[in-house]
Length: 339
Ligand code: G3I
Image (tube, rainbow, N blue to C red; front, top):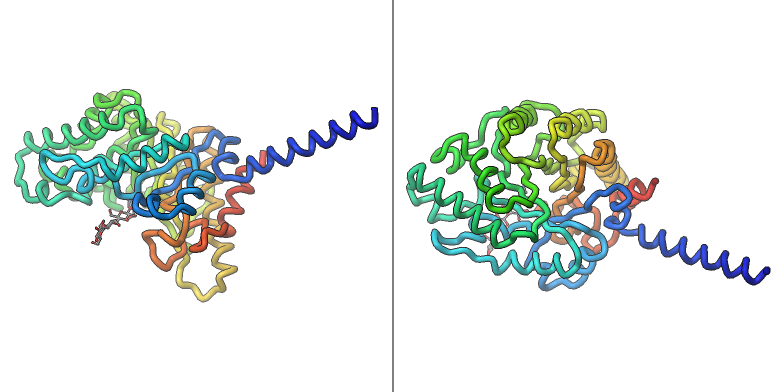
């Protein structure tokens, strides 16, 4: 009898340790909250740095090609599409049971020269954009969790940002892009993605008004991506974030944190203090996401390690240059593993 008790106790301890180890990764802990944990991925680095690839496999359940699906990369000439770089990232994701965020179909940046200088008419431009959306989405049909259909279309004052799309097609380019995307892949989740709209301000009000109108008129849209590029200088509270995010979920769109990074401002504070403040910023964003009743479905960062960040020297991410966990990582795990 005593042996049976000892064996049962040992079994329980082993299973408990295994369970906790399983939860010791962001992606496993994210499952407690039905939350995908995402990162931007640099295709060149993925090819050459095994530690980078392994860290992604272990910690993340969603990846976004940082540049490989942008217009100038994937559509380098009027009648030429090049999926060679983006296919590598999608293949890696599918082989490792990781979801992919398509980024991005329509943006004012990364416009190739043939398009910029093409002097196309409104009709020609609509044909080009529709063909771009259809060709890219059909190529990846069934392989993409969510698309950033339109990226960064508003200025901070709530006006529409200048772009070749606005100038040639007019303001309706946004609505048309979502309609074409829905036609191209009816099963893909379609997101609008932007920065500096995480709290209630002129920009987030303009985005809210657009999405509210889309919902009223039946224009297909499934979610809003809050990029959340921020820094230690930027002050925001959970209350402000939740108030803004909730209003979007209440009009029937999912909320995604898509590109979070927290620049260490050049304060004089010690690294220890800066990393603690950074961990607090990451915590506030994650806790706010978790408060949106399952309508915040992904928590994504714009990279994983400070070694390859677009923000050189600002140490904005949750793993340092040696791929070691920073206080921000520990803070996220601690929040996600709390039942
Ligand atoms: O690949 C070329 C290389 O061949 C060339 O030698 C080199 C020097 O000109 O440029 C390389 O391309 C650069 C590309 O990143 C890949 O590294 C582009 O110049 C550079 O502009 C591009 O910057 C990217 C930026 O978007 C503009 O596309 C950043 O890596 C990327 O992190 C950033 O990501 C954006 C999101 O897409 C949207 N939200 C904001 C976010 C940060 O700006």
